Image (cartoon, rainbow, N blue to C red; front, top):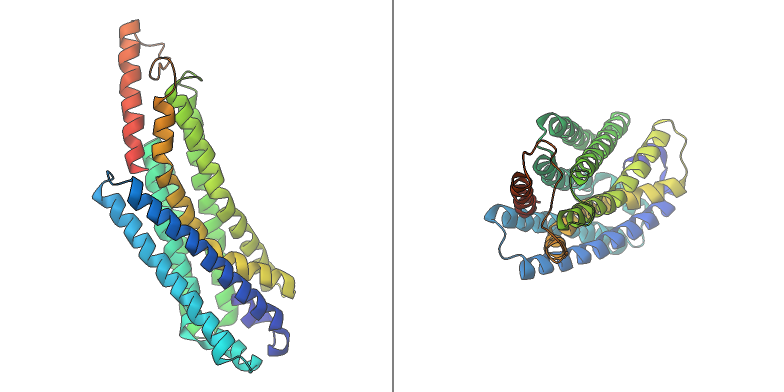
Length: 311
């Protein structure tokens, strides 16, 4: 929505309005996917702690409110202003529901990012690495709040600058978070026998980490590129439409990644426990005997499995 205000006249806005409709439809489809994930979680994860259940419940509430925003904007654009293109463009620029879309997207993204930072802490126990990611995400949220204030005041040039800062910080934090999680999972993997059950679990975690992070990272890259183009005045309708779609579905992609991780835990545990052979015989050169190696291995396996409850 940011690029339309700064770069397009009303007569040029038709492709953007069509892209906005496509973006809302895509967001509603992803919301349906989320509802299926929420239903799966409530059916198969009754043993989770109250904290995780509250996280899922509040995530469902936030994404539902986001879906209500979608329907409201589409109704105004396609029903209330059906025969008035100029009025539809004006409503996109001034309607308070439209003006809060960026802010709600930032809050949902930040909420999921805090969950992923906690996951990184469980995996790494490195407060410095987690702190760097937190700094990026907190700064991104502050930028989004400032951009929302500028959006209501119609300060479009400053608004684009803050949106660029928000997306850039979010993208940097995502790359830092995903890279750090991948690094620590690979480091843990080196300490286990490749055919052991925990190796299987770490492989699954690594695969899910990359797969769940990729869609959101791609969307953030596209948004950042388009914002930079818009800030330089070098923009056409096609990138605007693409940016509109990716920017709209980004919060749902974050939420899907979180639910994907939560719903995959039981499958990972079952696959790990079904592996043949000893339970996570880790190589520990400093151990004094085979008995101490086995004891250390079992302790690490217990810690790894228990940590899944918080992932």
